[in-house]
Structures are given as structure tokens and as C-alpha cells.
View 1 (cartoon, rainbow, N blue to C red):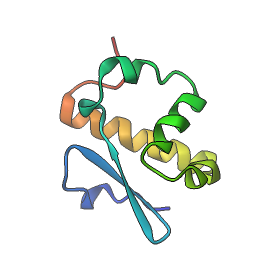
View 2: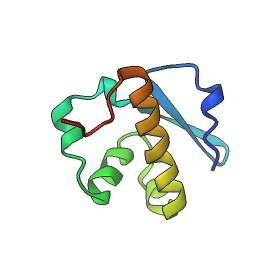
View 3: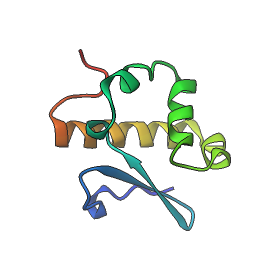
View 4: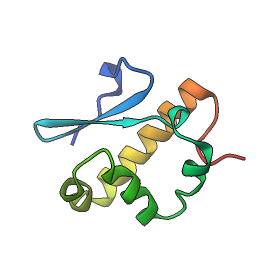
Amino acid sequence: MIIDLNEVKQIDSLEVKYGEKSFMIPLGNHIPVKRIKALKTDDDIMKFLSQYMPKEVVDSLTLAQFSAIIRAWTEETKKVSGVTPGES
């Protein structure tokens, strides 16, 4: 899997490339705070990702891939909003 953040031009979503396919995950600045605060466990985050990526893709992610997605999503959300998701 490759996440090339240099090629992501839209500030409202993170493009995740997986094999030949790409998936767009909305950044936190477009998601209600209550919904972000509900993302407390890895299972919660996997359910969230499954709304934007096929469940079989989410279920096949390695820990390194899962962490890379979350890290990139958090960093990009902070860039556009100035806030780290989950901060109070």
C-alpha cells in the first residue's frame, strides 16, 4: 500500500491507495466532533474505515498499514483544521 500525500490535492479527504484501487477517506474537519470522539478503540476506527473502504480491504490491513492510514489521516486533519482529532 502506498499513501502519497504529495499527490493529494484535496484538503477534505485522504486518498489511500491499496493495490490498483484508491479510496477517499474524509478528513476530520468534515466529520462531526461527536463521531470523532466515538473513535476510541481500533474496532471503532476499523468500522469508520469500513464506511469508505471495502470491509475485506480493512480486514486485511496489517498493523503497519492500519497505523500508516491513521497517522496520515491525523496529520492531514491537523494541517487543515489546526487541531489533532480527539483533542478536547
